[in-house]
Length: 292
Image (cartoon, rainbow, N blue to C red; front, side):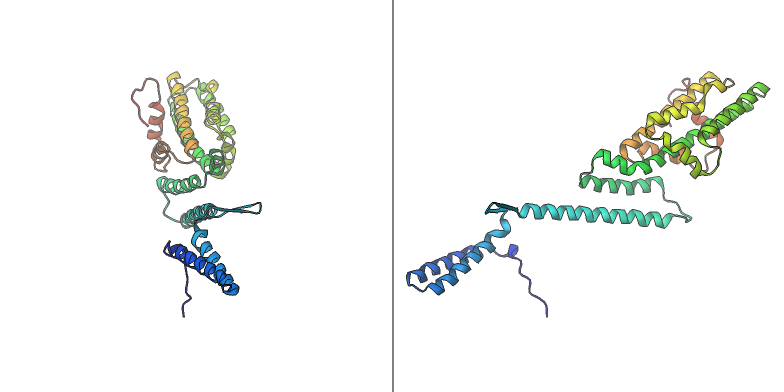
């Protein structure tokens, strides 16, 4: 046996009004005929009909110094619950996706990863998260993007400087190269473990300006006198370009389109030393119309 369910919101809008009028007339009639018991019954039915007829459409009830919001608060609560449910679903989807790809053969692409983050950002917008709160929530994710960009810069500069050094076999240049590479490792960690290197570099990735300052310290002109000045300027231009890309990621709280393209092109394990050297060279003031 199924339980009957009555939804008064779906009842005809005139039904309770007609019933209330009928009950009121019967109440008046029985009062005039001094049948008070029956009149009381119909007066009660009259009140019930009025409540059922108008209660669902009231925004508030105010009586005896009590102001109660009804329809507006219920509607808002339903909206909030819906947003929380959607956000929970999205978070679960991200968690399951990360769990599915961790430690397995296929890798999730940058674009697929950002599509998931964009979905979260949309839900955060729906529940009115401020930009400051969003940036705080996304900080670990954005910092990792900064580390990916820095790693490309590191590989490109070390590859380019190593090539320039090979073209200068004099002892003084070799000595300067050794000093430069040791300083580089002292700043960015000599350890090949990505986790260790990340912990060294990450504190410099709070902003694009702190990232640029760190990059210029790594370049260090004083020990690179065997490198052509135009090449040094190209290195600085590359640092500025990468920091500009990182600025876009900070603003978006994730991969910008330019960052995704740049990292997929130069951050893959298949990138060749020649491609990295060209990346630096195309930043030279002498190179015109270069596009990353």
